[in-house]
Amino acid sequence: MPTTPAPATDRSSDETPTGESRVALVRRARRIDRELAVTYPDARAELDFTTPLELLVATVLSAQTTDVRVNATTPAIFARYPDAAAYAGADPSEMEELFKPLGFFRAKTRSVIGLGQALVERFDGEVPARLDDLVTLPGVGRKTANVVLGNAFGVPGITVDTHFGRLARRFGWTTSEDPVKVEHEVGALFPKKDWTMLSHHLVWHGRRRCHARRPACGACPVARWCPSFGVGETDPVAAQKLIKPGPRG
Image 1 (tube, rainbow, N blue to C red):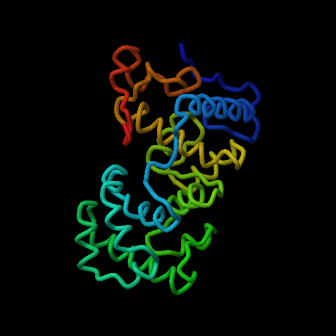
Image 2: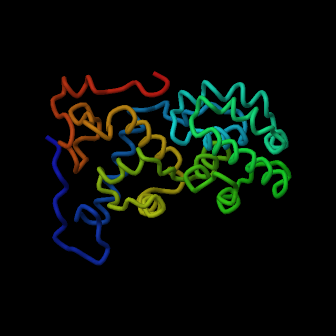
């Protein structure tokens, strides 16, 4: 039976969300990640792309919609706009038609055209491989920047989307709702080289088992190390039925 980590008897100034020692928190966090790596050996970005620019655009377009819908829509978009100059010079009304299935198509059109213009004007049409540069682009925040850095350039980054933040709090790795604080607090628990795959593991687990509503606690591979065990369905048979195959299932 999973149990909540016992409070540490020696509470130093290095407080942890669960009251366990810092060393115990780090060990537990890394044990969870190792188990999730075994559970999801194919974990990866679920947006289809072949270049950094395609991933950048797809990530911007994924706001308030699903990866499945983005992947169904981007082949036509990528064919019509093969480079940053094409996005920069796009006709807004034509682009809006292509973006309509994704929702918020007018705002996304403005962002992507502005993105293309900024890339052409400031980066010679190439997607920069530095976070400080990426976050200056229209429609690009730290989450999008870390997706691109980690998956297109191999630069480690933590992507704090809704799934990642929810699971980090359930695991007792942080109590913060602020994505930047979550990024830094969770990042401090893991070697930098693990950050990108850690992001994939938590996102995959959040989409498939640890749902926002009624998580499948009874069919969770990391239940024994989770202080939030019991917030969802604990019966193994019932929990098994809650598991989703994920966007590519």
